[in-house]
Length: 122
Image (cartoon, rainbow, N blue to C red):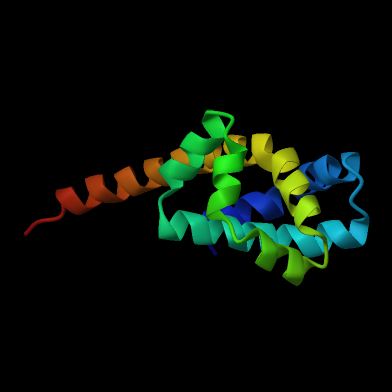
């Protein structure tokens, strides 16, 4: 499982609350979140996680939205394109927190693996 899916699953209540606050129904929320996770994953695979973080850091969720296939996410989740945009704007602060938190833990675990690999005899 990739760390973006982990972020969405671990904080589903927080993401749900953000979407509830902007008028998403429970049904819409639970159809939207998996598609949103897939969309963000696609962006990070096609560009980089760092570019996505930069967009969120600079408060440029609109730039992140340009990298996403908003219409596809809307079709798959059964909401309008406007709702997809509003949904991403609502969850962007959480995404940023999760990218930093999870990204740091993945980097730490990766560097531990490198140290172990370097300690192995040739």
